[in-house]
Image 1 (cartoon, rainbow, N blue to C red):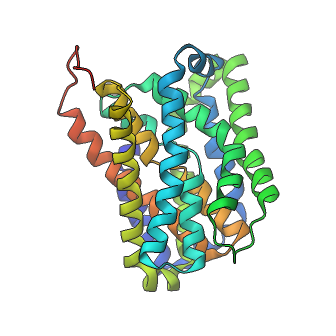
Image 2 (image 1 turned 120 degrees about the vertical axis):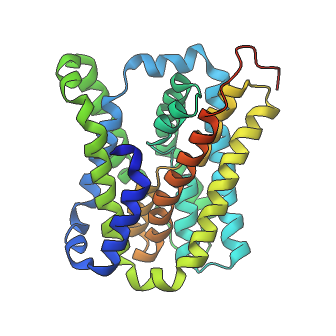
Amino acid sequence: MTRLFPLWAIVVSGFALVMPAPFLMLVPVITPLLAFVMFTMGVSLTPADFGRILRRPAPVLAGVGLHYFVMPLAAWGIAHLLGLSPALMTGMVLVGCVSSGTASNVMIYLSRGDVALSVSISAFSTLVGIVATPLLVQFYVSAGVAVDSWGLFCSILTMVALPVLAGVVLNTFWHRAVRRVEPALPLVAMVSILLIIGSIVAGVGPSLKEAGPIMLLAVVLHNGIGLLGGYWGGRLLGFDESVCRTLALEVGMQNSGLAATLGRLYFSPLAALPGAVFSVWHNVSGSILASLWASRPIKRKDPPC
């Protein structure tokens, strides 16, 4: 079921456009739903995952550095190149400035990447994003758009940091109980993300019909630059193939649900549109890339990059 997430996202988006009323009723619970998704991510982590950052800092720092350099700059450049409206440009920048996507770990596993490294990058990216996201949004967003940096920081703290921390604590002290429900968590998290996407799409239905094609082009370009930037950035830094695949997906896949939620809360419903579209597309592209790489096993002794 969870591997078919891109299909379900497209189906839910279609229903949200045709029958928006039920999804609009969910708008007040978008924030709690996102916090729950981040909690499920925290439940999958342990203090050892953060400890690995200290034992293997180079690829982790490279992944996070490339992520917060490539994606915000690419979002800003694409938005200007395509002449997007201020609201859509803001939404693009938000997508570029949030942490790695929660689905990247699964895609990296399927693509024969380095799963332990992926978990470390995701964890560190989430921590860095608490401060980096508000600052980068303030830097890249058009001067004519007011940015509540403190509000963004507080929202990221309550929607991301605290739920993840709660999940880590629960997994650390009540690991046996967590193991019993762990198999169901990915499905529950996926349903929560689908409900978030549906409610956001329902709220921007008329605008989506008008801005849909240009928005899809912007998202495809943004995601593609992230995937290429992560992979070839790893190559230039001398990492092996497994690490390069991991960096590609960690840089190219964003926590777009968070971006969409922040766009709706702090800017406008239209600013949430890029995050909603990105949520669908990056899972499609990630699945395709993972399938291609899965058919190309990594040699034990990969030549130097």
